[in-house]
Image (cartoon, rainbow over all chains, first blue to last red; front, side, top):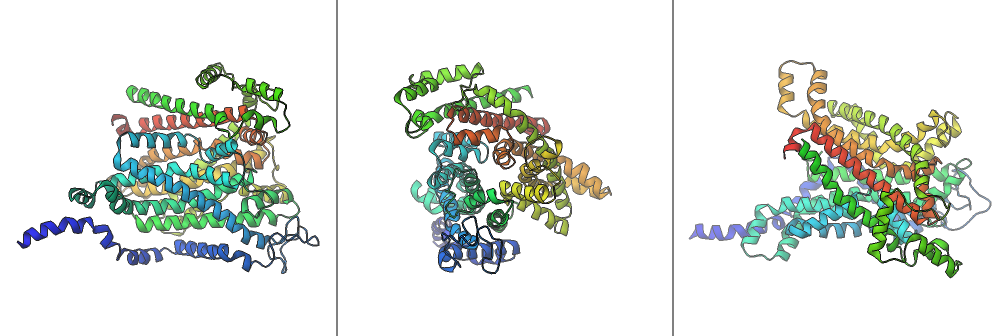
Length: 300
Length: 306
């Protein structure tokens, strides 16, 4: 009798495996993550940036849109720590206000791209067949347009503007998630707990949402972090080329683009926005590296 | 071997076909009337009819595609709306600076990337590894256009060592090729390091060490040679993306190449030129990927027999 109980309970426990284990995992993850100093530093930097993004306008020393015609193109000084632009607007205040637009565009495009790519990738990996062929060949076609060219092609088609940049960068993000999530699904699909869940009669929808998707989360989180950096670079590049935010708006890429015209007399207009883009992308990449090493030490 | 080659070459044909359809449909996916977009709000109906005629928009869609492909095989990419010149002529005129820039970027970045990667792997956990990997992660994080502007400001404007733009002398290639190759160097450094670390854990490397071979011989002859197959593949794929990178670099350094032409054509809504450029860029990428695949088959016999 006890043996019979054991065999009946085991598959259910197995099927609940990832949910039960999830309680102890965050602690272990946190401990391992804290050992990676560069990733922790990157996380702290991004946290500060997020706080500034959330409360930026209140913290900014000046109104980011207010011109000051007595202080045109002045370099860094105690009054204007990062100098002023061609209208005398405070560069630091504009960078603080611009973080909303820059991070907003990049994060929203990656969230949209990741959501579409993840759904397509997980379904392709789980169901296989014609759906998998369609998704994978579709990704191959999108990958036939190298790097940022796909985003440029989309903007060329639908026109410049912030919303169009979000669409372009989201489309450019989809194939990467579709591929990674498909391969993650393929490996999770073979796990014992999924087999057990199927054998106790779980329906596909439940298996996908309760067992497959949580199992692929690690790959998604790592790719998401990495892709935010790529998206910031892509959106800033589009703005720089004149296809993104309007040059009057406090977007980091647009600030760099308009500052380029004054590089000879006020190089701070190019240095500071570029440096901030660089540090933010670097932080996302370092955080992505740290998460990857912590979550999946096999890949280095 | 022959079968592998034929299979791979034939495998790219459907991809090229789908890409050609997508690029053909580019004109049709433009919201609103492409003729109106090109000519502007003040264009007369007669002008619009003429543009539609020139773009071939009056025929049924399948016929338009067949005509497009026929013209393509005859080397006819249409006429530029802005300049009135044949698009193929415009592209050919812009090809040389872009190719020269690509090669100058490729040479230094591939070599330096591999050297940094191998050194970081050999000196794992030491200062050289940290410096190498810091350079690499910075290289993939730095906005290329910003790097270009900073280099111009420092080396051209402040120090006067190299020209600020154009491609008139060999010195004028230095800054654009540094800017363009930076991300490739970074990706290759990271990849070569991880590939070398993996190879250095192999049994044959341990055996070579156990035989008493010198460390540099173990690294170069056993570990590096075996990791080279994967490194070559990644290098090839990165080079495929160089053309796309040229869009930004040519804009920053005012180089009259293919990338600059694309940006200008988008600004002027010169759709025939945009269409031709997208086709060229994507076909180049597909062909380079194919060459990399074939090369991988040559270097790694396991792939051929799978």
